[in-house]
Length: 142
Image (tube, rainbow, N blue to C red; front, side):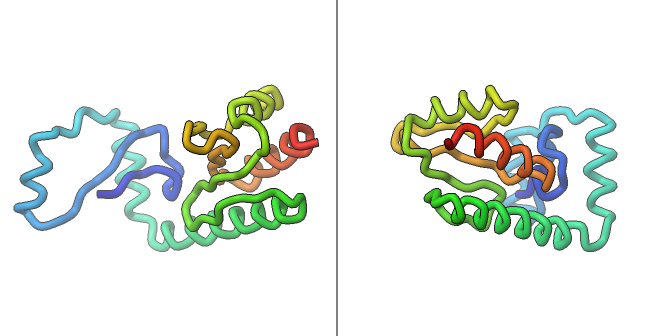
């Protein structure tokens, strides 16, 4: 199973695809697929035709993620390293308070878990997104 989320830049479409042996795909069929808007289907189909897109996006995501980690390290911020498009970061206060302060600076960060009350989930966005994250972080972290 694959989705057209961050790597394809189409997280909002909620589109995906499944490839596999016919017997395994038959087990998925009863769960249905719902309906996709024609524009979403066209975007998903077109993205599959672009050679090298996934490798290019993975490399870009890695570069931006590592740049963000470097920024956090310079600030002395603890985080859980990740190879994904998101990571967990220690904020030394209730995570929901930190998230609200970031939102007040027009940056929305991910959800908070009760088991990690002082950690927040940060999604790695575009270079512009992460520049906005860093600017808001500078204000909120102080």
